[in-house]
Image 1 (cartoon, rainbow, N blue to C red):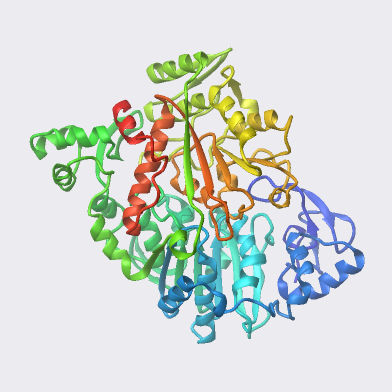
Image 2 (cartoon, rainbow, N blue to C red):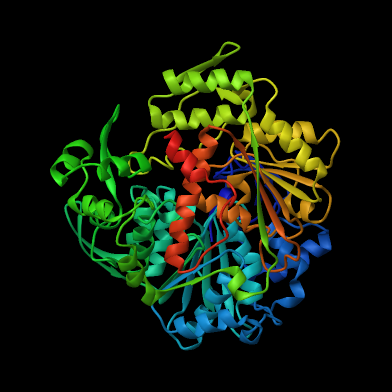
Length: 637
């Protein structure tokens, strides 16, 4: 097939800009010369397991391998036949009892929600279900959508390991780091056709279209891994995931009907309600269109308690905070409450029945019953014997420079230090700046855009601060305490930061006397494989870079220098060390500046974790149990 170099396996780019290869030219392994990304070649082909045997033998003769995916297959060449079938793949008899139970329950189901904690083996369960459906003729294709990097792990680890022996498969890994640069036709009609892609594909203008067309014209099962990545109802990516695999009838912009074109769908996540109960709508809408019989706005009004506030961006609805809840509680009648807070009658009546603030949610029992028929909730500790998790806290004080900057930002929405000024457009925007000051720096730059529908998470998505953008506020007590703790801790240890600027400064100090690796979106000084192999004693990482796709059971010490409001990131990051195979107690240490936004962040995480525990029908260990952050947060609000 004819295609350009930038879609061919032989073209070897080296410059990754965060979402695509940016090389204008690169070496062609086939021709042995450098070619332009737009060069067209009659010999071009997309790498796939079925074509690896010849390629692998050539690489062995030439002592070279073209990319990581080919390297993996080269290392495991004897395990595969002509269509990539692993001969010693693990079968059903090696699944854990809880996995067998879930396979038996969902093997013939059309809607599958595996809300199981990280490390419980959701991937193996989902692949066992897919294998059953393929054997019975229900499906002939499988689409797996996962976060970037994680999708590659599905292709090179999960599928070969867990898709049972005897099932021939043809696998394509598409997009992102480690995936092919374009999809292509499947060649073997008697094999299970599997396409693994990263979720960012559905954010591109057109790359997702061929995938959607393939899904709707085959007997396909779709697995959405880490499904909470599709929770922003306004994002194009979410809209495409929800509706492009369906036959949709529209009247103007409104959807009249949406009928699935797939045989089955599965959502896999241990954190289905990372930012609140409204996250469930998108997940269940993907599973079955109109699952709740309500659109997103009606769902939110039914299950979330909202108030209307006016900001510089106009009027918007926000989730009830403790002070808003108390304000509504104090009103003598609904008319007064509506005039002041713009809340619904249902919200007013719910608040009046509550004795204390328990989160901005209502009708939780009804919602739990609605999702029960298609879902299972599991904790790792309920499935296998695991060591305990220990949550520590270190409380510190701001230094003088931080105190001045923090007070100025709270009072005037601006702060200055050594000629650098940082500002915020409103009180909600100031949370970003206050978090940065609490970490010890200020930054001059544009504040993230405000999202009125998710005020608690609007600055979490991809916003980062790099080292060259900041001015440090003297010697930071929180960081000094971290240095002492890391030096005294068992190794290997992991340090987690919210911003790249924090990670870089911590790395620059620790690397003077230790074997330290930096792993951020801004810069990486080594690989996760090297850290696991013992080359480094300390890993300093961005929470967003490290939270998915890595197994780090070699370490049991994790230090959170800073947190975001994202419960998903927090739980996913903890789950890197707390997994099957961990033998030591996992210790998680947080650093909290007294009377700062650190308290609000931890308070928000605790509120979301309490709700998650309720939906699961069980309880997790208290997050930093000995400190009543919620009470402090309410007093400081």
